[in-house]
Length: 448
Ligand SMILES: Nc1nc2c(c(=O)[nH]1)N[C@H]1C(S)=C(S)[C@@H](COP(=O)(O)OP(=O)(O)OC[C@H]3O[C@@H](n4cnc5c(N)ncnc54)[C@H](O)[C@@H]3O)O[C@H]1N2
Ligand code: MOO
Image (tube, rainbow, N blue to C red; front, side):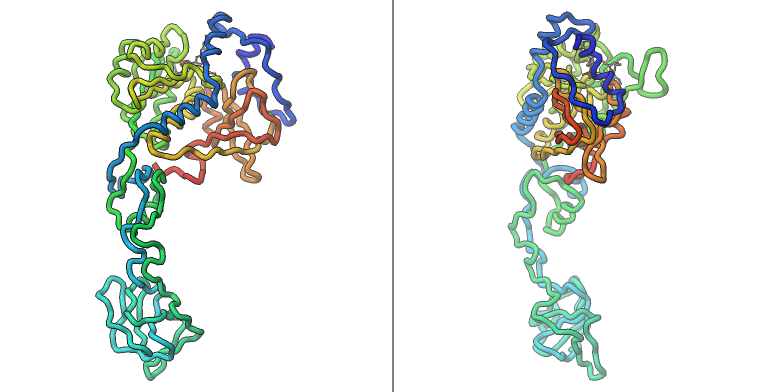
């Protein structure tokens, strides 16, 4: 394979419909080829510096997990989508009293029963008088059981006669349709572990268990800096200017990852402005877009040096997205540089920012997912590929989508995951790791 072949591989593959029976891509050529704008030596040096994809992601996971989490009591109506900082322990027995599970009759001892003179026993009312053996009282679902009651008979399973006697229409067992105090949990029982995401069901459980506020992990704060003088925020592209595709995408994406973002800041292609914006940020993570490469107005590397940040990952062996970078600006404060090409930015987001934010927001590491790939997927000669895929409902396999060039969002917009394709490529039926997208249906769901 020639240098030109290697450089063109990503763009060319993006436009190909996957071919049935396509074989593995050819093995890596003998040396790394130079791309336009860089000497072979420069390219070799850059390639040497770049971190293998799995290592880069593992580092982001480790850094995120090592971050001390801040927690705060959060009102229930503010807690959706956050993460529990402490285990959720029951503040009360549930149910907190012996209660009727059905509308019907509370009865004491064997029947038939005399219907006492007291009115119906209702939910939320003062305790009813004790029920003597041989008596029955009408009772509503959720009402406190009168002491002495031994069972509840559903209204449809009993009849009354003219002498105010109650007869069961089927055998009655001791304790039937009674929910005894503590059946679901006892005070102090752990209901959920720390790290669980607060879903609507968790909110309901927390309220039932006596909580007004939940201890949740404070959302990590992310400042988004969008670089590029060529970007428009409205209207049609014109005169070489294009719409910013990343600002509108990153804010909700980061929210879905549990982060809090302010306004997207557009800083243009000016090194001083960028350096001031980075140095002035107090966020846990500064996420920049563009400016990661070595073009005439790509200032990110210089700015990282200027602000004294430590470059931890300088390029990743992944396509698209290889110029992505990760730096530490202070203990527990990070900068992730997403490449400007929009799908490359998505790759950087999922490789570096997502695992970092997962830890920063107190979430546990994502379970690794794999799926069989429907067609063969060629590998990049040297690097891991991240290929947008859709799950097939019929067999759970994934199919690559077209239009996944580094500058394209058309493919990812139709996808529900990214398949991690090793340099050797994949044959039809091979299992691939799948990075899920926050809006794709997963057991964790998405409630932000
Ligand atoms: N000589 C080389 N040039 C480039 C290489 C290389 O290896 N050698 N790598 C290419 C790759 S791969 C990528 S990815 C980009 C990374 O570039 P930057 O991070 O410096 O990004 P920019 O140059 O600022 O922009 C690249 C491209 O993306 C468009 N862009 C930027 N921001 C946005 C946005 N918010 N919304 C939509 N599109 C955006 C920008 O207009 C450019 O077309 O470098 C390659 N070059
Ligand atoms: O291959 Mo780049 O990183 O265009 O995305």
